Image 1: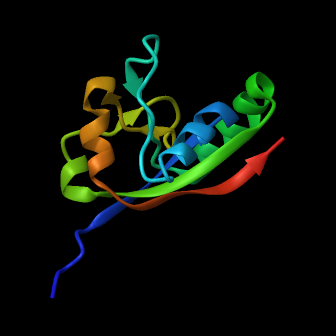
Image 2: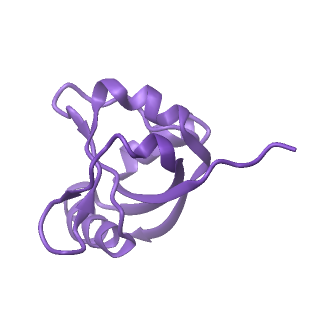
Length: 117
């Protein structure tokens, strides 16, 4: 019997273009970063992800989505939690060149849990 690795739930606020790319990858991976995006920022708090999707993505992209996904906890230990503002504004900073490896440690699918327009 195979035991499932321990996972950590992460969220990512995203706009429609990035979400389309995720869907093209069967909702199992994040697309490569653009040259002006050297870091991939998943967040550790659903409320923070909602605020970004609702208040930033809608204004800039016409729609905002909050995704939820699981990543192997042992793998995530290499990324220290970054406090990007208040006490609950917590992110991981994944260098763009490590995104393929990060994607390989996603368990299950990336699902949309909130949508704002």
